[in-house]
Length: 205
Image (cartoon, rainbow, N blue to C red; front, side, top):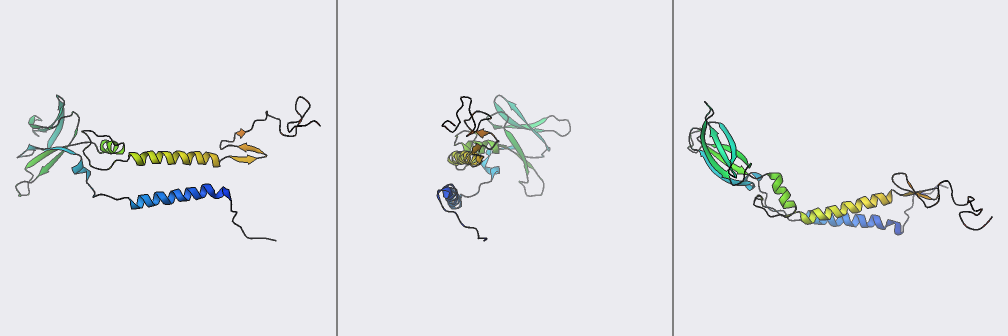
């Protein structure tokens, strides 16, 4: 007689129930987490904004690091000589953006601004591990607690996967890699005759 599937209740359901409960808790925390006003990285990562040229932009710009500072340099398009320079950061090798703007409103770019910025990736790294630094200019909350919690949860998930991958085959425990977790000598199983004339499961026959 064919019967329908039945739900087998018992203690073996505990890991699944715990996993579902953990998922629900994390979903509630994530959905209910407050979000602040978005901040563009262009403004958040600005260190300094300096006027490089106030008339006749050359269109040829670059940066030079000297004396522990970063300088924005405008070059003459005709011969490549230096037309103007301005210090934009007190650290060497800082990234600089060059912005041409129309300050007179005549439709022609007449002013060049040199904007020094910190690295977006660097800012994210400082915020993630709650590290205060002069190079951390982008505002935001730190993610250190979330980082540690994710590490713990992922480690628990890995341990659980390894445990669930163990199975029984012929009375022996087989791991995920196919290794047999047994104490008996190779080639000898329960009920076989041992070297002393007895058997592995005890008693003499």
